[in-house]
Length: 571
Image 1 (tube, rainbow, N blue to C red):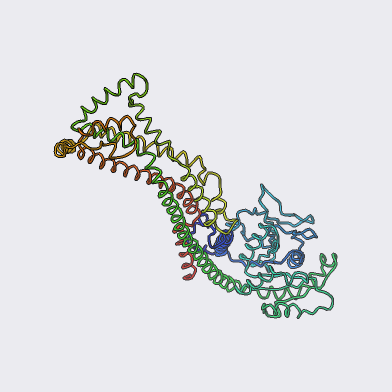
Image 2: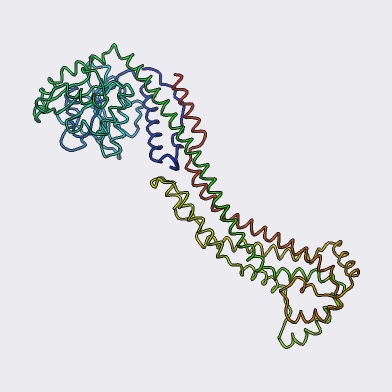
């Protein structure tokens, strides 16, 4: 036994694709095929025998030819299709073919002494059995013959096993028939085998009377499949007894002689080395193609994320332009009232004016026409200001953004897991999801406003206090009150009182500083609201981005593929 080949490790399970430019199924199939190729290469590197696979399409008589080739009815035959659902082997008893076999789903079952009762592949907990029939013929000790599932089977596992046996084989006996020779699947297979230089023998089975052996040569030559004439063999149509008896075996004797001469014991080392060279070339090319497709998906993913960012950024910007005016108008009154009370307290005539106002208000309060505002009512007013914000534009903008993601960013590959994941429940915010986040944001802003106003009342800087008093003395003239200058948010009674008191109220001090403070508060409030809305949209954007990123192949795996390519080229 030879030492196993040292192939770089690839994290095959991490190879994924969102299907943006390369169909998801195609990339997964390419990764699975390359992994299988590597596993088979590693397995064959530890062996010293030649594998010959009998392959073909459904109903071509492949298993019958296999039985005649090995001289025993070891593979099941019949009209039921497909009959062979797992590989059937025929080899020398000394071969430890089951050790590290590259198809762990198959359960090996060795059959030493063949009996008349044909053993069909058995299942053990959904595992197919690989029936390996042993012999002790020293003339064939260097060979293992394989009967394989149909290449054109509708069953995915049958096609998978057929592909594995193709990779495992050092040579192929391809069985064709009159009704199958032009089948597209089989033609592509022969083109592949010919292109890769796999030793190929063709048995044209069930030939019609009068058909010449040269006919298959010409038929396949017309489609570009040029092989030496001795690689073709014609088998006429036979009845059931003829197919199962010695007649077919004798008919095949010239073909068997040619086959065994090509795979003679003295050719084993050369054939194995040539097969390894071709396998390394095939694996290197496969690794390069797979890495290139992963790169294509990665670049497409970056462009997708840019488009996603642009979509949500533009949605949020347009929304904020619309919401800014609404937000300022809805909340301005409550803020103005609180701020002007703070700065009004430092007006020179604030106390006299408050005294006069209280005298006038007292009887009205006793009559229940007006009443003073409590601290609890002040906070409630701020919360009501929050509740008066119309959230419809935000809800509509989020719904529109989610719809645009599915309409403009969804992959065209509808079978891609990424396509389905974008539509999973809980990915796109529902109306309730968005509104709950908005209510939380608005509650946080209301609490910040309350805290800001309380801080102003308690900790107004001394410099501002001095500025208010000194400016009041300088101006000394009575004009409109603070409320009138700011506009809005005052009652008719307060307007009347301010008119009466106007000659005694100074203009610049409280007005000027309150106006500046009000602008600062509103600006920060708008900034907070804008940032909060952006965070809500970003959270939704990040959900989509995460779905994409979870379906991309990590950069490290791509590097592993490049290492595999380089290792195969240097070997």
